[in-house]
Length: 393
Image (cartoon, rainbow, N blue to C red; front, side, top):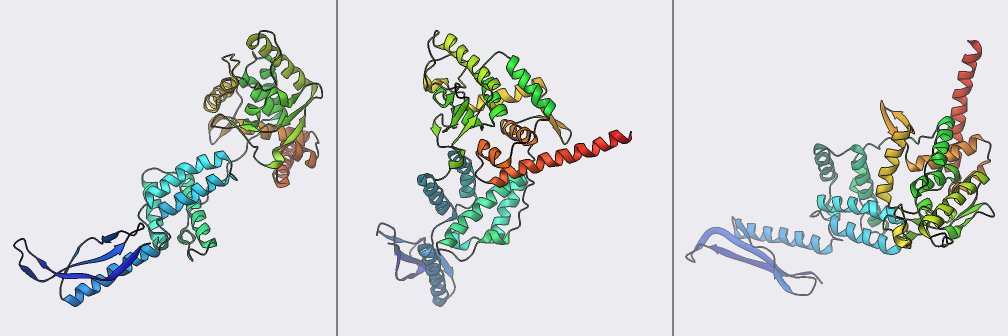
């Protein structure tokens, strides 16, 4: 256990010949480290009287006692907090992966700052430095939120009474607008997918558009969870960045989705292609991924689509086929998640009730589903206004 021992050592300073230097003192204190070993604080030279040296010795004592009684530096506390979250198993893997870099940045910025001693001014200085080297306000807000979360954790456990982040104003970034395909774009994309040569990427996009599957759900789907005879898909797990299956986002995500005959025919054709080109006409095993890799491998682990190349393919595919929207004068491709959002919007516009849609989408919070209905209502309001103009013209 760390502990300061005695009153410290105050001795006259000497020159290289061993002669005492007037009005100059060498001050240091003895302490025990975490392993109980005796150590000295760094030697400090004081000019003045012996009383001045004693005052400095007391300052050193207070400084080291603060360190001894501290819950640690921001860096050490943040790393321990993050490690505990990893071990708990209650956080999504993607959340942990995203937080890894944030924690690294915070640890580097506040590596020498004790948790108890970090001042709002020091936090603001770090944020300003990040701005100076080109960080976006979104990135700074993300790091600020994580730092504040770490301090709230310490306060909740009565380790601290003050959160310096509460005194720092950081602009909240504007929420990203979710874009949905128009009905014309929706029909166009369905036609393109159905007429294109089949591939795992094409099938993944089709699943998102026609069933509202999340990306991980689509890429992790195996044939054992696809019941073409009874026209349904069972969502049980998802494929993640570390090339393995894991639990779905929430318990509500575990669901069974009824599919149309159109989707059944599409998937049946694709399974037939896999059977012919990968398994030599034999039945496709139940554990084989629906959205398989183009390499035509029978190996289960190698057959899954890889997330990064798939994302790059999706961008090129949408740009080449005009599945885009305009944002602040720039033409951008839709994201995979926006296909899911588009599916929900079209379902809502077709009159599917909110509880059924919540179940199909696997939303834990019905508010998420209601927001989709609000988007559809806004669109119908706009169409109504334009219809009136058309009548008057």
